[in-house]
Image (cartoon, rainbow, N blue to C red; front, side, top):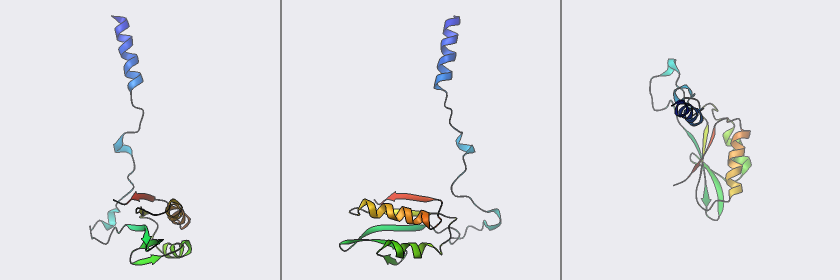
Length: 119
């Protein structure tokens, strides 16, 4: 009987999950208590769409089409950094062009850069 007890004890110790509980994880999106009006303009995600424009890849930021790294860097500099940026990559884009978008966002000061493949 004592053997079974020790085997169960060892089993539960080995299978126990040592990860942090989900309620203790800090969320990426946090609200500010003084600005909790819920207006639609409170959170506007910044999305860099990397897609083909004709035969050449280009960066699409809002309504602007930026053909090179320097143009993207200049467009990202004045944006607020606290909400982060999404990099959405479409089919047919060279991998190097997509990686450049992520690196330029990091160089511009964004701490939260999220890669999102296009559907």
